[in-house]
Length: 349
Picture: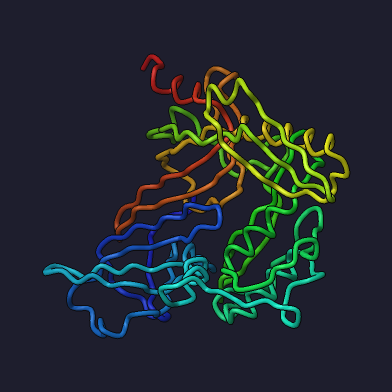
C-alpha cells in the first residue's frame, strides 16, 4: 500500500492545514472536502471559487479531489473551508441554483448518442471548462436521445441522469446499468461513462479480511423496487412482486428500454431488474486500514474463514478523515446480504 501523507493546494499553492475530511457518496453526487486552516492563513476573503486539489501522497500524479471553494467558516481558532467537486459545480452552476439549459427545435440534443448528448449539454451550460469531456465515452449498449426529445428548460444533471438510465446492458446473467463518474487526468476533472462492474468477472482491486484490514462493518438497507414498469418501443409492461411488497413495502421503479418490442418482453425485463436489485439490496459501510485509492465501481473481495461469507463487492462510495500525521478510511460497498456483517460481529475472538 502506498504511503498516505495528504497535501492540499489552493490554486496550485500548497497550504498548511490542521485536519480535513473527504467524502464521495458516488451515484452522480458531489464529492466534498472540508478542511481547516490556521487563522494565520492570508487572503481569506478571496477564497471563494478558488480551485482546491488534494493529493494522498506527495508524488501522486493526479489528485484524489479537485474542486472549488463554496463556503468558509471562520472561528476563534481556525477557518473551515468547504469545497465541492465538478459535480457540485454542475448542480449549482457556480451559483445557488442548478445549472440549466433551454432546449427547443433549433437548440437540442436530438439524434445524438447518450455520450454525445451529455457532452453537448455540458457545452451549452458552459460547464466544459470545469468538467472535461475528452474521455466521456458512451453507454453500452448505445442509445440515442431522439425517442423522447427534451424541450424546455432542464437541469443539466437531470438530463444526464435520464439519459444514462436509458441504457441497460443484458450481456450478463443479470441486467447491468451504465454509470457516470469523474476521473482526473492531472489537469482537470473528466466526465466518463462506463458499465457497472461485473462482480463475477472483473479484476479484483483489493482484498479485505476480517482479521487483517477491516476495523468495523455496518449495514445500510436500500429500498428494493417491488413495482417495476418498463417502457419499450411503443409498449409497456409492469412486474409486481406481491410477496416482496409485504416484506419491503411498495417501491416503484420506472425505466426505458427501446430494445423491448412487446409487453411480455417488458415484463420479463422488469422481473430481471427486480432480481438484480434484490441481489444488492444491502450496502455495507466499512472502516478499513487500506483502500484509499479505490474508486467508485472498483471490485473488492471479502475473505473469511467460512467460504459462504466470502465474495466480491462493488465500491460505491468513499470517505477519508485525514490530518498531516494520520488518516482513517471508510468505504461503502454492496453485493451480499447481511450475513457477512452478522458473521464478523458474532465470531469467537
